[in-house]
Image (cartoon, rainbow, N blue to C red; front, side, top):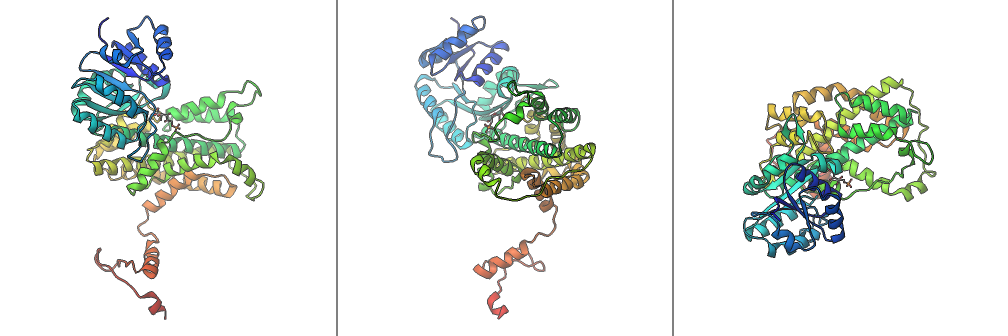
Length: 480
Ligand code: 6PG
């Protein structure tokens, strides 16, 4: 049998769909899965395609054209602790003795970037090439065209570029893939993409809860979200939310969404984003609020005990429906801008610290299609970085500045409405808090510095003296 163009290890749902995608673009594919029956079933179900399955890893490797391109879609568990090892390491360890110099190994999972950097170094020292790539778009994206975020050496990228460009989503013919940068840059950008995904999802959930409290039905919400999806909020997540609202539960006949337990899961990428932001002193309060909202939702047992014990207001939202819908729309849009501004700020700062030379405009460009956060609004972000590639913060771009200025009043009204009605709105409020802090020429940190100096002689700077000159007051003595 002739040699395959590409090899894939790990035939879970994403792996299977990615293989079918690669094959559909004219490439032959060899596949391997730890449980051989999965390989057998998959190959049998697609016997009309150029897909070969193998029970032995050695046979699998031998079946691929050199220099080999082998992608692993294996669940990675190792987090921020650099000494952690996981299934990806195990696969690499068994692959290495079978590879030959110049072969390329690709990790397509949601891997914490420090492990990609370590593995790349180890493999490159042995004469192999390595790429850690984000692949976004879920099952459907993997099959029809994901957004792909590869990180690694230029040489490794060049080797996989034709296949990645062929299988990726396209926006106006433009492939949703670019070489993100060296080392762990691809995995890092995908991790923050997921953090932003968490923020988008939480903001939508908060909008839903306001509507629900205002007595708007799920059917009406389906229409509202469908309408929003025709305008500036157009995005995959708004679109699927509108569809979710239309689905009825087969057992009760009620909207299915209302029968689903309110306990959110998470696999870790959002939490990693927050950890990395804290380590690098970057504020991502909207994403942080989204991660914490999932954690609070998972404390359902405690919430059920607390609910009858604590008082809150009797909800009363008496704005006319169309006015409320427009204000929530504006508040959601403004909050979303803040969330993206924060995520991109994190990417920018960490990219600089690692010397990844990231192009934020290109990153926004490949997020326009295929991925979970794909949205019309990403065109505007791409344009903002085309206008100014050194943009300090997305909020400062004239287009986004204008929207924030226009929407800030509705945004405040909606957050106030939430507070007055006892509706938890952590992500909307965190975004507004960031906006108000960012636009404050003077924050109360002067008092904070005084407190630090009072109890710890930490010194302070003065407004009337050059920065970098430090003063100390003997506060207790002055007080007497
Ligand atoms: C994507 C998704 C994908 C996955 C998330 C879900 O871009 O295709 O982000 O990577 O759905 O990891 O994460 P949680 O399980 O943490 O919500």
